[in-house]
Length: 151
Image 1 (cartoon, rainbow, N blue to C red):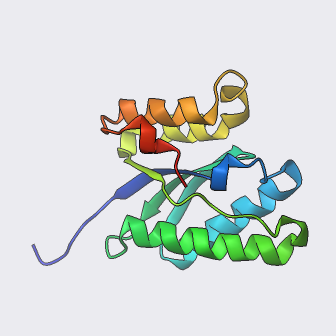
Image 2: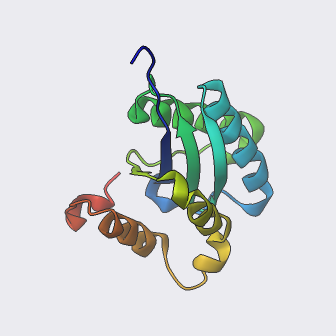
């Protein structure tokens, strides 16, 4: 085969430092647009972005030549700086160090898009912490809960 063919779709999840509720409704839409722009700038495609005041979900198609960890590092760094510039009252804004990155099959894109779009409804009955643990279990990722929420 003379070419490489990939379809690398990820559901990315990460929270603000100490899960502080700092992504207020007046900031959300602008932040989501900016994050989508970062993904495009890295050669990816944003398929859905939403979240709550303390965390973010992204469904994105990423390039094969970009490591997920590098994409997340760039995304967090750039969006954090942008938040400081655009919202001076958010000077203490920061992302938590870790993240969740879960692969998604093309056939599951609509279901994950719906899940991400319905975050507010979903979190009426579940905390972010419970949601994240559920995602880890669903994706069969081993974890030690005593290290899960350290910054």
